[in-house]
Length: 479
Image (tube, rainbow, N blue to C red; front, side, top):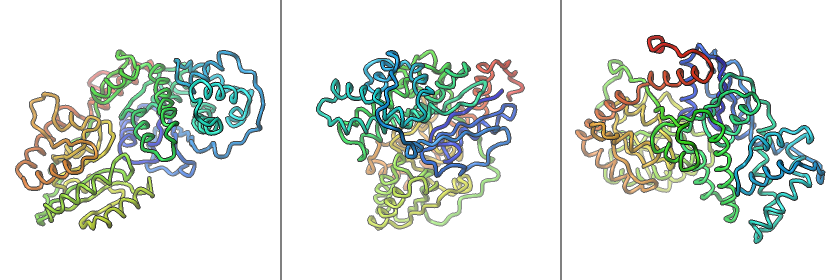
């Protein structure tokens, strides 16, 4: 079977999280061939893969959202669009009615114009934006509206105009542009489509836009509405939607997804061979670890503020932040400046490392994200019998406290961005070694019972087989 995985902003350019999830899936299914449709933010990423692609990856198609910077088009052409195409475009831009994506696909892939820029320089596009400005944004300067909407949909048009490789099954691993490409693939090739949401993409974009300086206040709603519209495209088109935990499913239903399509498949991790793990050295330190990319959504600044409080109460504490630093250079520099301004000692940014070589050294693990799905970093730490302090994002509360499973807490959950509560939780664990050990034991027990790696892989093998027209493998073969 040939499976096309469509990923935005992750595999194979970025390590950890969703990328690790994809890499594991491909590696564990050598009987299938995989195509990677990789959507990156910047063309400078081309060919710069962080993973050695498994042998069963037969093709990788790279598409970059900044390609619009190279596009130019002559102004003022009139393509005389059909009324259904004008209606679809109005719906996409105005968000007031359901978008007929089949008409959008046919419009944006039309051979009547040679580039996205040519269409967005046309009289047809101008007229639709002018009407939108009059009806919904009469107090907004038209010039600002025109160029804002143009920059908003240019990457979408470019993405839709790309060819999609043929496959037996398409699997988008987020909504957004990856979801639209999945819906397009189904429209063109008529093959089944799976959507997997780790975090809720549209909610994450909303949080980013609310905080963003590059979006003027009166355009924030327009951008937010646009990303929810993109999510609706794949919610409607997907044959099967998988998510990682029950709260995600509730949110998807709230956003208009049919509940009957959604199936919960949790992540899974392999349990380490405890006989190979060296003993934690007795050095008098309390080691706090964070396995995380250095990007704003992981809220490293709250982590540092939190550790500043911990350090005053527990001077022997050490914070080791393990993860790539190059994804957002500006943010990484800001974090280093914060370490300096807080006069923090014993903060180590390791860069990208083999995490399992470090986890055994840690006493406590920490996650301060403002948004997550079901973090693999938390599951991996729990599998190493480590207690966690996390923010209340994604499935963290479910992972640490369980769902009435009779297993005690595996850590402490605190409010997002509340560095004082996070700090006090860490201080409590720093000072109570017996509590740390008890929570670490609960962590391993919960992962062993509910988050088995083989269960996760087998669930997707069966799902691919059922949708791809392949007879399901017997249970004995899957195991």
